[in-house]
Amino acid sequence: MNQRTRDLLDRPGPLLLVPDAVLLPEGPADGHAVVVADGAFRAVGPAERLGSAHPDLEAVRLPGHLLMPGFVDAHHHLTQSFGAALSFGEPSEIFRRVWVPLEGALDEESAYVAAKLAALEALRGGFTTVADAGTRAGVDVEVVASAARDAGIRCVLGLICNDADTEDPSVLDRAEQHLARYHGDPLVHPSLAVSIPEAATAGTLHRTARLAAEAGATVQIHVNEHLASVERSLVRHGLRPLEYLHRVGALGPQLLAAHTTLLTPGELTLLAGTGTAVSYNPVASAWKGNAVAPATAMAERGIRFGLGTDGTRGDGFRLAEAAEFAQRLGYGLATGDSSCGAGWTWLEHATRGGADAVGLGARTGTVAAGRAADFLLVDVTNPELALSWDLPWELVRRGNRDQITAVFVAGRLRMWGGRPTGWDGPALVRQAVELARTTVARAPITRAHPTSTVARERSTAR
Image 1 (cartoon, one colour):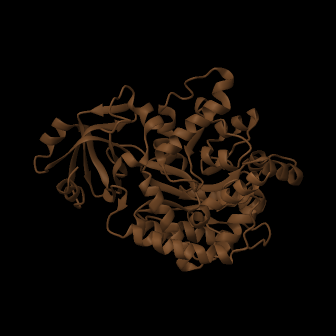
Image 2 (tube, one colour; image 1 turned 90 degrees about the vertical axis):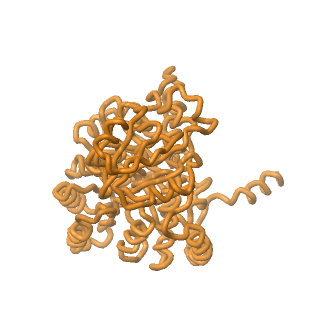
Image 3 (cartoon, helix red, strand yellow; image 1 turned 30 degrees about the horizontal axis):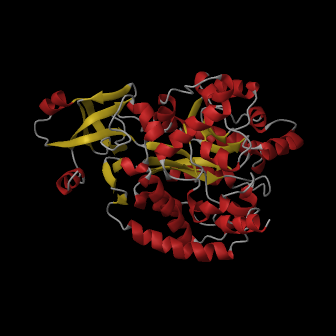
């Protein structure tokens, strides 16, 4: 698309957009168009009908492009971006040795830049919404909120409510204030968070669940992530983490349980019966987990779930592909299931299902009248997608962020050709490089695995 088209897309609107096809929940609709105004889709339907209904609008034609919902990252840690590669080769509980020390070394400037850098990567990868599970940096969470707003991404912003070690009586007051502080914010949606079930008292787990439910928000908790976390809960409570959360009354539609890689049949029944949502994080499972969450079984049983990066890499297409691939390797090969969700399952849970899981199902995640105009323009003329026989499945298996021409959030053009509009992305990256060096140098990080070059030297020496 040319500069004039870009300029038309960058107008405040209303906009009548006419791509080759629009990706609806039931599949791609050829010859469809959308009207975008005031940050939302005002109409979706056949292009000819919308053109007749809006004769005052100049049709912005987008040949060779698919208009599809933006991806939703259902689990992220925005202020951990300075240490993304520090997780390579590390065993499961790296939060104790890497993430807590790293975030503890952040000040306001570095926390802001780290969060905005993560948002930039997410936007480049087609994510229009990210769910941040709360920062351990000693800064006001408004620093993270500002970074998300300035980048132009929608953010479900967690506030950590851990109190098991301190028994801080003010934690619930802060939780209520956080929920009120961002109520009605156009891009930042408040959420509560507990790092792991053992990090909060039973009373706080129960009360944060009720506060979030009353506010229409979520509580984010890492649950059944790996063997160490399950064993720790069994020793302390005599129950697995998910079972313990059920006992204290913390399960329900307000809970967003991150990872849930280790689930018994009974725990699947608990998730389905309580309406609890899950973040399925396949790349994180491959990098540092003990297992892959049984997402195909979740889909079959109607368990709500989205896909999350856990801050690994911000490419929505690669995340959807990893979601399918992990199910194929973990479950499909052993059972002869060559379909493993037939492609559409992972595309849907990367968009509409993810929005539902993070508590924004009524606001975003699909192209429909009244929903926020959070969407992508994807070039379908490239070698990977042009010879299309099954576009939804091809997007999962052959899509990548290089095919994204434009990213819109709340009806505004936020990314064009991989670069942000309205602010200097390369300058932010340069600033992040400098701040990351000093931050990592002063953080008491302990790695269990050497860098790849050191590992190669040791291998060669052997």
